[in-house]
Image (cartoon, rainbow, N blue to C red; front, side, top):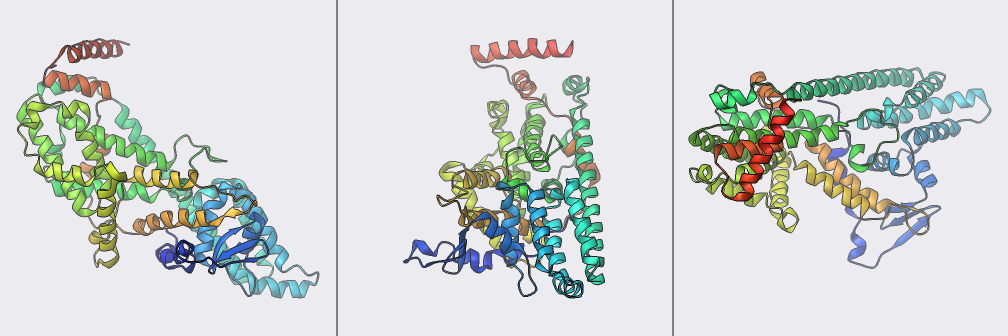
Length: 470
């Protein structure tokens, strides 16, 4: 598992975080120190220059770790990471520059461990920033600078840089693997339709007929893909300043949700016989329930979404053969009304269970990721990043960091389930129907009920036949 921020787990207990909303309940006490404003000892705003300076360690000072995380996470809303890195390194160097070589060496020796600590927190929490060659050059320059005053810190810098290079290599390998899997899944066999008609195609039940085991394997996929999501992507949704890749790992994770939904719909619409479709429906309902029990809400919602797609929901004859009581309960838990209030209650329960759990299985919390991203997006867009006086609105940044830090705590859990390569391979590579193909398969298994559906089937047949002959 990729390294996670060592202070994410304690973020919620920070005095910054606990006191941030106290002004809603009593008369505020605001104090300004230079270009930084505090409310009940909690930083609420400041000029960008002052906030950068507040990040710089000195011989007698190291910034609160929750502040380091919050500012590094959200600073990209205001300036490029390389610009922050350049200014940070410049300020660190200026801290001990006196003109006296001996005195400078002593100051470097005293300050170096804190500089290494700060850069370590940055490289481990936001490694994508260092895909920029200029960032790596800054690290190299700082390493050379520290070597003049403190050999121990220089070695620590070398070790940190090596870990970063290994992490970036792992990220690159993961992205290549995802691209290969996506390419494999996109290769649609020409015999897919024939296999459907002949009943020879492997389906999920021929690979795994145990709902709990399939839920475990889905959890494996969720945890691996989630672990490669970089926290800064939660905050900046527009194009990255320096992104060279067409698809981020965040987008790949969202794409996995969509694939799972279409896989579920494909498995249900594919069988020609009604009893086989009903069996697939019942199986995925059981898988969804097991995902809920594990705390895997992302797979749960993807499965429910797949079963609620119109090509599946219109299969009335199939649904009539299924006891839907369990499905109704799960659907109620994930009901989007009242801003997903039922789901949010269940998520809080899973989070509390995770806090008090003694086993990794009980610690698993995989949130409905699209909703998490939506929450962060509206928090970011719905509140000004700068105040009328030009200060950075740090109250907003605390709230953003709180959301993301909770995600980082969940990300620290190791998957306790044994991997089944055959099942995993099937889940991530087996071809799935497109939306048009799903509709046509649905019409072929349970015929159109009205003229609109008849026209739709006729149009789909013509369109798909035309595509096959291209």
